Every structure is written in structure tokens, then in C-alpha cells.
Length: 176
Length: 392
Image (cartoon, rainbow over all chains, first blue to last red; front, top):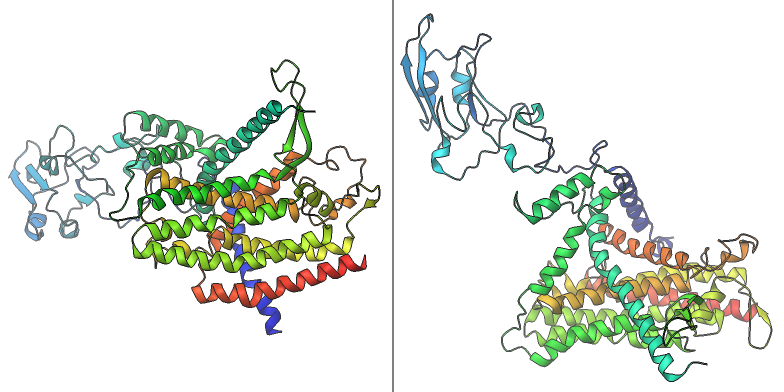
């Protein structure tokens, strides 16, 4: 019996059956426009699903009226381990709480620990889901409240490196 | 009757057609290898070119991204990669290692490649005339274009003889590189190929014993189970029970064929984990491409021989079961080039399938499989075939 077991390549046959099953499934169904069966992602063209707790770039939020939610309590500035946040307090007509006249974020030294978001008592900042943060110049990592290409309120423009027509920085899949 | 000039011109035309078919299929195999193994590993395989967001490569990438929407074309999205592969191999620097044996180093890939292509000289793709040249052609007008290059009576002997020369290329390449890993790879390959030559010959011998001829064309027609008329006028047909040794012989032959072509799971000659890349570690550029061409051409030759001997050749059904197809069916009962190439492509796919499935054997396991198991079972297979030949 053991000789028969050695002679007949049963293990090889079962292995071939398994890989053949996967080949058939992927060969006939792995098409981009249909349901995704393959586990890899065609990255720059197809948006990637990101886990909800992913910590990306720091972003400031506005409320329903378009007002900046930050009230300059300086909690984030104080708790930041690498001291990348700089806030200047200011006043604005018709607003009771203080208003940030300057909110600078130096991403080159940020360690994405999310302490600032946790310390914020007004839910006025988040770490968004953006992970394509590379830049050609060091100055591009200093993000302020107003900027030519990126500021604290919008995600950084990235979709320009994609060859697909559907993936743009403004598409909902891309910016999360 | 053909004049000598006509014979030479005809041979040149046939060789050109055959070599161009091989040279078309072999690079395509590298692309198919990426895709098939990708699909088996739940990936997509090659789908794009490396390149920036502007320029030629980006244009190709945009085109292939658009191709992804079309069902059948989406399989061929990475096809430009294989043109880029060939271009890269052509343009790469040709390095000869310091203190290598230059002459042997240069000659080794050629020694490896020529037998791989020469094997196809006797392989019969179609047992007759494919088409006749029209009379307007200057020299070859009115001559038939046959489906085989030569029809020599010792075809199998020629295949075995030529096929065993290829190992010299591997050993010489390993030795001439002046490096220890290629040398070890070459030696391993020599031991492996010489060991597996024996069960390979024995499994083919069963087919020869059954049919009683060494001619590739007659062998494949007889082993397909089709009644044939001999020169003496008698009608001969393979007995049905002979399908048993043919069936087992096919698997023995395929196993030995994997070892002969140095493919996974027998690719000890180029075991990346132990020897850097085996006998072609020091080879670059076109010389490496010749080794690769030889390997894939050998795969094609092994597939063609297995298809012709065991899988019914140019007939539809394998293992001599073609007798069950009645002659009245128009297409399926006739020999066809499509059947032969279909079988060859399926066996080439099996090569890739096995590569994605099985891990590499250890060296002692390889030797034990060859000497302790394959040689006895092929001998038993040969005995069964001889008994069937003697009885029926």
C-alpha cells in the first residue's frame, strides 16, 4: 500500500487541481471592468480602499457655515512631540471665539502620531486618508492656511501622476 | 521529381517558416509565463510598462489601460513588455568575465541552442501536403509544401542523439565562466540530464516497441490508433489495450521531459537559493538570451514529441482512441495542424502550471526519483508494451 502511495502522485495531483482552480477562476474573471477577484490592485488608476483608522496628512475642518472650527486653544501645538504646528491667535468680526490667523504645519517632521487630533476638544482637525505625500521640494512640506498648490483645508493634489481618466484628485474615491 | 536546386530552395523555405514559428512562440512563452503564473497566484501578471507620465511608455500604458475594458484584449495588456524584454537583451552590455575561457564561453550558448532547434527537423506537424505552391512562383511553382521538414526512417534516434548534445552547452558554459556557482550548476545539470535520459528513452521505447518503427510520421499515425496500410499491403492497427502503456508512458515521458529541459521542479541547475543563477550566472545580453531560447525551444520540442507520440499527434483523440471517431465526421476524423498545435500549446501550459505549483526537489530526492522509481516503472511499462506487441 505504501509503495502504491509513493508511485501514484496523489499530492501532486491535488496541488495541480488547486492551482488549476485558481487559474480558471482568475483567467476567466480577472477583468478590470468586472468584479475584482485578483488580490492585487492596479494602483495609480484604481483607487485603494484605506482602513478608517489610517493616519494621513493633517487637515483643518470647517463647519456648516464655512467657518473654521479651530478656536486656538493651542492644545495640538502643546502636545505635538515634534512641534510641527504653529498657531497665531487672532480676532474676527462677528465671531465670539478666537480665530487662527496663522496655522502652520511642517509635514517634513511630522510623525503622524495623531496626538493633535486626540487632544482637540472641538473636532476641528483630522488626519485625512491621503498617503501620496511625496514632493520634489522641501518647501512643499510646509503647509499653511493659504497656499498656491496645497493648504490646510484641501488634500494635496496627487492625481496628476495617474494615467487613468477616472481617477482625479476631486473624485470621491480618491479623496476619501 | 525535384531538381537539386528545387530541393535546396524548398528546404530553405520550410526551415525559414519553421524557425520563424519557433522564434515567434518562444518569446511569447515568456509573456505567457508571466500571465499564467500571475493568474494562478491571484494576480494579474504584466499589465503595464515602466515609464513616466509623459512620452512613449505613457502612451502605451494609456492604450493598455483602455484595452482592459475589452474582454479578450484585456489578457494581452502587458504584451509590450515582451518587446521591451527582447530589446533590453539586445542592447545590454556583453560581459565576459575576467580570465574566463573566452572561446568556450562564447561557443557554449550556441552549442546549447543549435540542438534545441535541430530537433524540430524530424518532427511531423502534419502527415502530408499543407498546400501546393502556385505555378507562378519562379523555382518552387507546383511543388508541395509538406507539414514536416524531413521524413527520415530513424527520426526518434535522431531526436535522442541531438537532444543529448544540449547538455554540453550547459556544462561548457558553467565551466568556462571561471566562477564556482556556474560550475556547480553545470555539473548538477550534467548529472541530472544524463540520469533522466535513461527513463526518457525507456518511456519512448515503449511507443517504439508498440509501433515497430522509428519514423516520427508513421509512429504518430500508428499510435493514434488509425488503421494504416504497410508497404506489403497489410492493414495494421494498434490494439486497443496498448493504450495502457501509452497512458502511463505519457506521464513518465512528461516527468523526464521536465528534467531534460531543466524546468521546475527539476531546475537544480539554476537553483536560485543555492547557486546564484546556475550555469548562466555570468552570461548577459544576447548570450543569455540564447540560453533562454534554447530552454524554451527544448520545452516546445518535448511538448511536440509528447503530443506526437502519446497524445495522438495530428489526430483528435489521444492514446490510440482515435478509432472511436467514425470516418463520416468531416473535420474531427481527419488529421489537422490545429489538433497538433493545440496539444503542443496545452503541454506548454502544463509546463507553466507545474512551475506555479510544485517546489524544487532536493538533489538527493531528484536522483532517487530518477534511479529508484522512474527507471523501474518505465522498464515495467516497456515490458507491458512488449507483451502486448507479442500477444496481439
